[in-house]
Length: 346
Image (cartoon, rainbow, N blue to C red; front, side, top):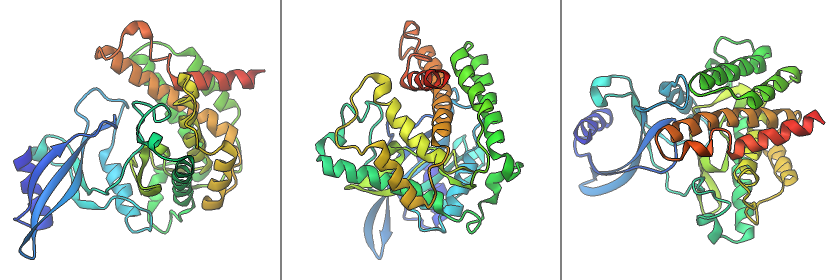
């Protein structure tokens, strides 16, 4: 792989002095394979080194029924013209399987740190070396970045393709259809999940109307923010980018944090701002009001529960955890969703 990728990079960058001198693999990421590259090349007669990120289509059992790596590349390509801190693409998207055996693309690496989710950042990790004030600043920087993404004029950057074949007024219905299809597929590979099905039914019955249409990150969470100090310097992972109600990103951010703490019986990291402060900060940076937030919190909880059901099945089948644990339902996402559903049925 190293020789073929070196040749590819040399061709894309028109630089025959470029060499790959190191590979490493980050711990996060499940839908595609990511490798960190260290490359060297000659600049004005002197040797210089820099980092790059290689993103490959998955070669293993998939978390999703279909996965379009080129979609993610295309989103980043369009957003590269904005002021958002998106990793710079290196070369074109490569669909020729003769190169590396899988589709891939390369980005420049931005220096920084990402909060860990495994182990949970609430219980351990580098966030615990920060003061409460620094933790608050870091959290709000990520929330503010999410708001800025939501407030971007998506038409100005040619993101109409995110509408796909759906009329704007039917965006939520389209997402519910996709969610049901995902649940059907997940169940077909495992077992029925009646509680998740009940959550999906609730979503169908309580759809809000008169919603705004904005750019949604689709996976807005602390673990997709790259920080230098307490400043968010990059927004990572654009596989879920879509157009819809921007409050869905706020809901996803809140629900994932809740699931990674309360969902596993772990106290929330001291110093993290409250839900109320988070909402106000997002509203300030996005320009939107957090209308219909409870609905989208349920949407996020149902979606995360399906993802964790699929993930749990994969992990149990691979022997990473015992089947007796039933991690496809005994996880933080499912607990949060069940609690939300119970509260709405009262």
